[in-house]
Image (cartoon, rainbow, N blue to C red; front, side, top):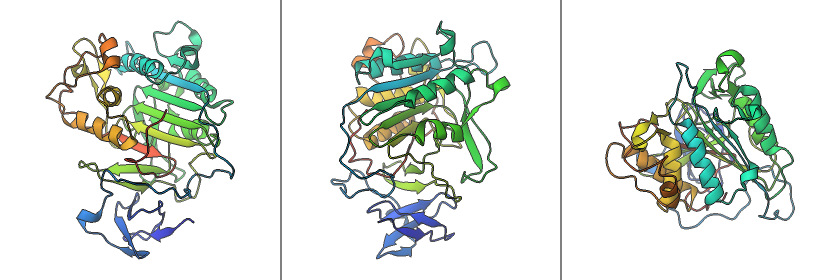
Length: 363
């Protein structure tokens, strides 16, 4: 059953994840410890769940609004939308985003067995006018991604480009700002707001469908508007943060599962750096995501996130290495180190809380 507890500081009702010992309030940032069903302010050493736990609860989660019945077959179709925008010849130009798109496509095809025909690429290098990364085409691609999805399907949305924020006026953002992604024509046609992304590819997902988003952009922490954010400290300990709007509007799915990796927190910027490659540029977050698998750290969501953060933090020294994927696309990613002391922290958000160190990564 769902359990509500009041924030120990501002008294806002918070929905407690199953078996959680503490929860952070996204409004005032206070952490409330749960002990004997009473709200007790924790000591600093009690704020987070320690990695890695050795077991996880098999109890059904109260967060995912799934209908009753047997679980769907795990076998289904794989579809992906990959978008990389360089904003070439403009004052907003980025160097690494098209390379990010190519690398992600290679990863999906060669490691995760996505059919080439099931991947839509949106970059400035595409000759098909319907695959140019303008606002209309990006919207149509997102609709295509979830159209006709069936239990067992695995969907991926990857975006590398500019991200931004704009003032929120309907009260569904705890920090008062909507997160956005920027199509190639955003200066004339406007940005795509997180509310629209959520309504298009999150809310419609039926039970048994899984969506992963990898968003390499500034201010991208909650760009899918998912209800929960995994707030992880530098030791790998984490606590789930409740980001559901106080209005009560549901930002989750129709029973499906959505998990998003993003390049940085909502108030941070992401790096576009040539230090990741001796030949060309690539986005720091996309590189670190791929690197986690090449280094054998792709077993769980927690191991991926900690690996990405470790690579970002160790910027400026050491070899980032590589595996089969980075070797075969060495003209794009040829080693080197993440330079310049990048000030960004990759984030993980989800439609429901889970044990990040026990849940296997599956795409």
